[in-house]
Image (cartoon, rainbow, N blue to C red; front, side, top):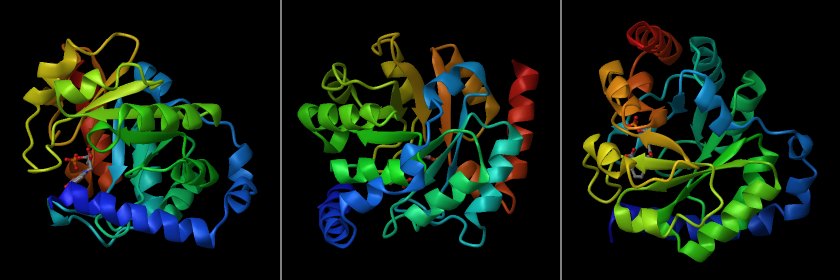
Length: 262
Ligand SMILES: O=C(O)c1ccccc1NCC(=O)[C@H](O)[C@H](O)COP(=O)(O)O
């Protein structure tokens, strides 16, 4: 079984347990459930385009940074000029939590993406109840019908949808889904190989109605300037910032440099 299959198998068990412990009625009582979301897709169009990620560890790199708190990282990213923040909420493989999402929400006003392996509507409701403005759907692990259902649920709650693809086949099954953004993951989630050329290769096939986002393996501003020529407006960056002692300072330097070459 590859790592993605393992993550998804664990996720099904986790969601069933959570449903038994915290009913939907309780999620709906959260004060954040009534909060009006800020559109990540719209923010990408008008700002730096950087979605800066809070990521403690990952299956491909194991430990990245375990010594920081999510409040400092999030406010550092906001002050740096990020267009949005991605918060990994998976515990077992990424060391994240829904609590991280809550603390990030309490620390910033810019849109927050719940970075999770979504397989059930319950997680969409959790995302809303913990302050997310957007959710991620991964085409590699969902059918067209599942993506349609989960995206419609998120849109009903006012959240944006980032639909992640890795190849043309995944793109084709995603085109009818009510998503705001299509993200091309440069990391093959089965082999962990990273190649920014993947974004460039798929860019022309993505219809203009979707905001294009390039995800993973981005470590310099020259790569972003290049990706912009292919129509990308969003750039998801995790490890490059999180591997430093001060991710907010790293993002500040990066975004300043990006502006200077624009
Ligand atoms: O990052 C991983 O190792 C990984 C493994 C399996 C599934 C997902 C994984 N990452 C999630 C992401 O999409 C990245 O955290 C995100 O795009 C940022 O990537 P990077 O800038 O390379 O940290």
